[in-house]
Image (cartoon, rainbow, N blue to C red; front, side, top):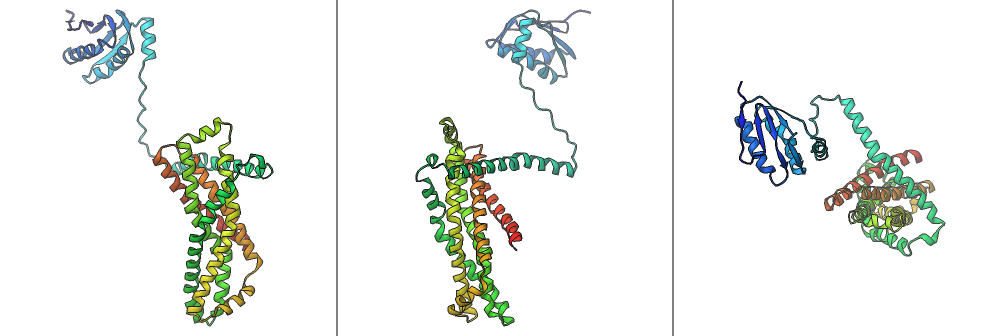
Length: 372
């Protein structure tokens, strides 16, 4: 049987039967011509099996190596099975060095069971969020306690700045919302109490609800939306702009430098905010009681000592302290987790607010059951 001969314009290879023999050099200067010629060979050869002999190849660079690696894929488009062989040691080393990254294999289309998917999601959540969250909590608790007895390491004036930012500046909006909530609470209850002739018990309902439940909860939700988002955005921006890395380079702990002053500021101001919010809510209840149940402010405030117990006041204060920890820790957690640019900062801020409000409500439930 007569062997086929093939000549190409660039003279980079010859076809001897079904063997393509490469010659001389294959570098970036002639790789494009080589690929064009061998593409033409694949199209016109009519063979189903070809082999590429590299024994005559003297030199190859990265472009030539990638061209060789592409040959089987190019031949496959013409239903040609291609085999590369007889590479010298130097050529083989370069082919191995410049081998392309393997594409990921297609995922199996087998549908996993619902229990497997739930377990996989739960494992990912525990590993990515819960473990790192508790690690951050332990770090913050350690430095919070340690810095109480080490004043020299504190940033002068930062505690006052954070107390003003988190607590004092939030006072108008918190008191306004608490007054409205107390007014609405008493207003909605007045119609039912009037039916049973128990108008005077509007005092008990308003005072207990605001001091032990609604006051701490309203304050925490407002602070979480206002200050929690600010904490998350500040820390996320510092991380995106590499300020967190700069602090570590200077030998400063970012948690101690950034988060601990916010912890102190929130722990001091949130109980006061809660008390003032409760007082504003009680005033709102007194207004509703006077307008709809004909209970004068004098009667309302004279009955307050009979309805209000020390336990209700302590419950509200303890809840506010727990909520202060949750808001700052959640904001710091999502701030430190940011991985992208401006879009990541916005996403972490949103997640911080949602998570903080959710955790505050869950903590309120747990503490309510404990103090019930």
